[in-house]
Image (cartoon, rainbow, N blue to C red; front, side, top):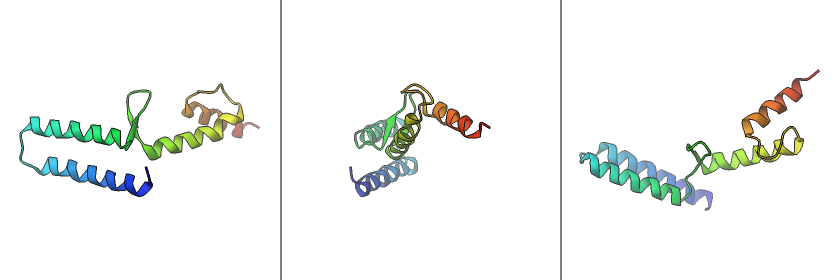
Length: 97
């Protein structure tokens, strides 16, 4: 999805959520609309699920992939090692005397 389209969809999602919290509506209706918005966000790939069940934006996901692509070729750990561990090992390597 082009950046501008993604940005517009993100803005639309924020507006809809703000309206829900400003609106005087029953809690069940609010929950239903939030669930629908969450599904739309997922379909538009405004975020992705992380291995621990959390969420990250598409931009964060792309950034982490780029970081992994820089760190894995250093051969500091096996492929698939978590990025935080790769970064830790790279920092240790840089500070070795």
